[in-house]
Image (cartoon, rainbow, N blue to C red; front, side, top):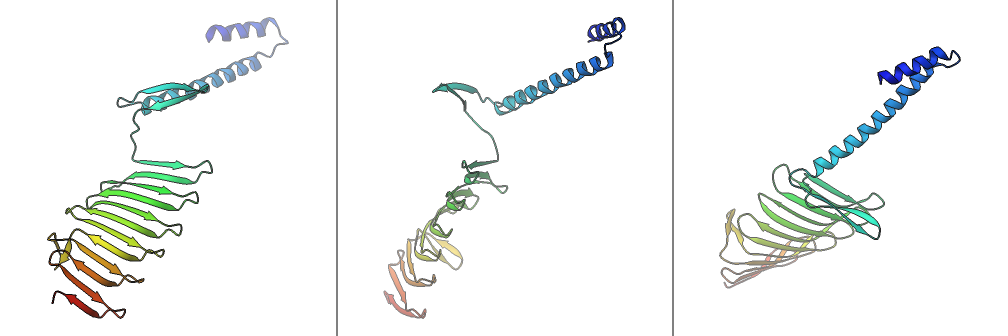
Length: 212
């Protein structure tokens, strides 16, 4: 750098018509441009090195003259996938309280599928075009399973589970099946533990119980 600068000064002294200050400025501008380009490549290399940290190997493959990068493992807390129109179509996220969830969306960005796990168990839900949950499957941490089918408004109509709740306690003595009306009120209940069947009328009054 010093030699180049001295050469430019010598040129300016021997040729008075040459603007040596302008030449030095151009030289430093070129130098800054090269330094900036070097920083860009350095940052790009750092990003690739970070992505490949923890034993991740980046491999290149060629398909139809198009090079693709194959990543063996990606470590992150949240991942979002978007469509060509920049609409979120999938999301994977780790919960702060533990567990994780996966949500799938339609082309309008409305959720249609949801599966998650947490300290309370795992759950799977499906939604209609209006965003209402129509299917819900729940596996609780206490060991029981639960299935709910809902109408287009998200109101439960049919439910079956592998346990009952008696005095706020889980009872695994038998399965339970329930049918509901359009507003979610129970109308038929079958308890597998004692073979009991209970029915209600549309006002919610009990109309029958077997066995008596």
